Length: 370
Ligand code: SF4
Ligand code: FES
Image (cartoon, rainbow, N blue to C red; front, side):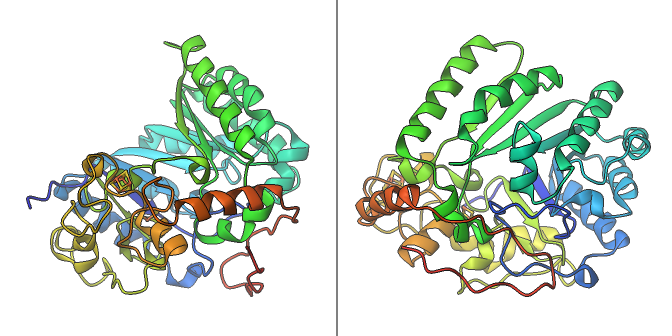
């Protein structure tokens, strides 16, 4: 098959983060600060990405503002010709730093919202004073005039705040709001009992989003990721494995998606040892689930196979024990009924939030989940 170049690259600059959100989809074992790529490595990777054909660079983490060289990295990415988007909780961004980022050419900011009031936001983020700080940062972003997307992660505890989150996006002058129901990867898998929305909540969120899309047309774009455990068809994860985007982890490991390392039989290459283009076009991990040739039934003969590419490989691994299986979210998967029953059980459970641990900190034993 002919492989097109990637459009977007997610650079996970660091796993360090002042917040400790229970819904974090980063791996349970995080990269330590001393293993992170140095400034000059990232600068080289940005040039290689631009040469490969990448247009958009998403600077993420952890919290990318935890990197002292963030402004230098943005400048280097712009010089390489990349469109730069900073994905941040706002913690670590001062007014002066935002002005520097603006001068360095930063094109866009995505600000995450853990809740619409301090009680909810600070509890979920595990960071007292975080909400007040974030509102201050939102004011500076608006004053400077950065194009803004507000990112909200919805779950059982905060889904009732969705209408207010949409209002806040308008008040902040955002052009886009991303309403994403929690996806259970990485650390978040430990919090399914605490965070799984009920089926009714999931339906209500879909209704609110549909209504908001009509009401806000022309003013605010509403992107929506529904609660997939309650859905009948899976999402087209990453736009299809190895088709439109790639991730670079803090230590330089290049991944087809952020959870790919949960697939144990894949071997991942590192930009310290191999050029990015080589990894994209000629590595076994990127080839493993490209296109449709790897599919088994029911995907192989399904008329949706080029629409969703069988859903999410990492979710198939986590829930069906086979990364080559149909995503169990799919109604045609033999695991679908069990998944829906499990979703209902998680949604009915009571469990405390398990906040994520920082890089290098001991990881608590995994709770027993149904
Ligand atoms: Fe998608 Fe496979 Fe389900 Fe068809 S059978 S809808 S390709 S996951
Ligand atoms: Fe890996 Fe979906 S998160 S394919």
